[in-house]
Length: 267
Length: 350
Image (tube, helix red, strand yellow):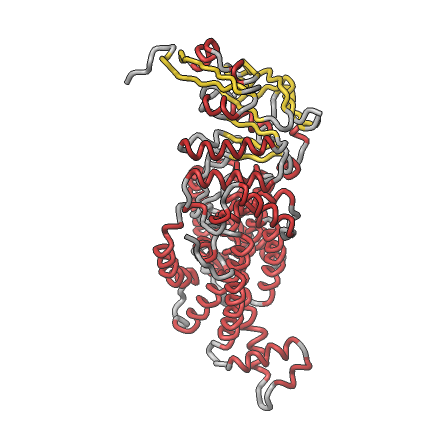
């Protein structure tokens, strides 16, 4: 059964389409990268999956049932999010934040059970945060904070994990950290969808890329089919050298931008 | 570097004991001094006739009467008012993720006051004891939902807009309040009632006042405790909250309604008291962290304690002078709050 499906989905904002005629399907175990220029609608597509906004046209189906019919708590048992914003502000400890991942599974006055505590401990272990469990989250680096949010998503035990430009503000080491964790989740049978700007990272980690531009899907497939010279020129306005290397049954795509395919903005 | 923290349950226990002791001392203090032991004996004997044997021979019944009919309702009213204001501060600061959100800053207290003054001016208060709190609730609710609706656009509530809307609506409420007061002053009796009520405080508070605020406080406290995990998540932001299953719009509506009830009752029985709702939750968060499981009960206890102690100071040192309760609460709490703020500002990145 298809886990997640967009059927002729459209969403407009102030009478202007942000997304139009989106048709695609997602299955468990996939790591899908959403790429596209700024304002292409990547975050909007994730918000539609989260039920934060409702489609104006068509539908988004989770296990063949429209996302809009799920209650917020029921949806949070299926879908978790690792957002870009890691600025928590208040002095929660790492463990307290990871424990919030169990909230959708607990009743109003229910205390986390031993099983919940085990899942929290496992999430901390999986993300290498055990030693930081008692630390206040606002004393951590951006990369560590992002790992805390990944740990929260792991503790949430959802079938779908969304990464909304979660690596955008991280150095290369922490980008690798977070994306490796995301890949592990996909390898464990979850559906991972990442909105991502770094095309090389997207090509390296994702099994499948969806290029969003001009309000709709322009390309959908394995990285070497999506990251092509004409598509990059048309939608990212760059001329780039693309190298594809075969590694057994998989291939690695490397993009080296050469020049802008439009007049540069000058002050 | 991990920080060793005292478990919040110990703070809860300590504050509960401190509140109990403060209540006994406060009840024993007054023009006629009654020893704390006699207060305990009088309280026990009021609870059950079995304990009336505890009254020492010669211990006059007036002590029991003063304790249970005059001083205890006043002190309990103060405790529940303080707890209610502190609880409102916890909820509003959590809901709007803003340290400045409080009943007075968002204009809700002034809305409740305006509602109460309308009830007094038009003579509705003669109908029933419940009319004043009802009108205060209507005033608080209208203000709360006008401020929230103005600040909310497409499901998002920018904090700056919210605070500015609160300031504007609060100014309007105060203007209307002054307008009604100036009209009322032409009729001496009505004017006197409004001025007397607007001075707030706990003078002459009876069991009727306790019975007005107690059920509202208990119900709201239980409901707010039920939403403690949602409030934790909301402190991290709307997107974080909805990703862990919080229906932000629904939770806000429920909690704003509960807050309006609490503020209305507190304003109806003791007038507007600033500072408690703003600062008590901060003091608690600075000591035990932002976890609402502990912040909610501890803030309620500390809010109650602040008002009980302020009222005690007022009656001990300024009995002859009519100083508003809020002056004492602010001058006692502000230096302590600033001390904590300076000590822990590294962790306060809000």
